[in-house]
Amino acid sequence: MPERMFWYFYNDKASFNHFIGNDAIERHCMDEGSPLKYHVELVKLLACCTMGKNVFTEIKCHSLLPLDDIVAMVTHPDCIPEVKEAYVGF
Image (cartoon, rainbow, N blue to C red; front, side, top):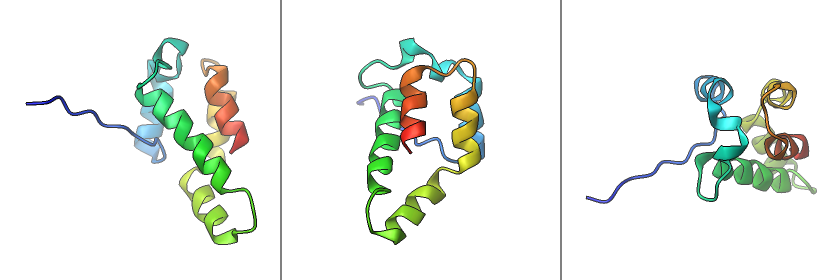
């Protein structure tokens, strides 16, 4: 039976706290194909969706990642620059 892989967008409180309290935000976890790499790329994609004149898309994207979570990630002492850059861009 093939191995299943699950990718996550850490946007609920439980998974976000696990994400912050875990080694997931360390540089060695940014390997190609890692859940962290997927999450960072997804945040960058959502940031692209929030630019422009489509107000409804902007509101929907911003509701997925609250400002408090963005601040928590950017100010976290163990957070790597790649993750901070994605969150600041959002």
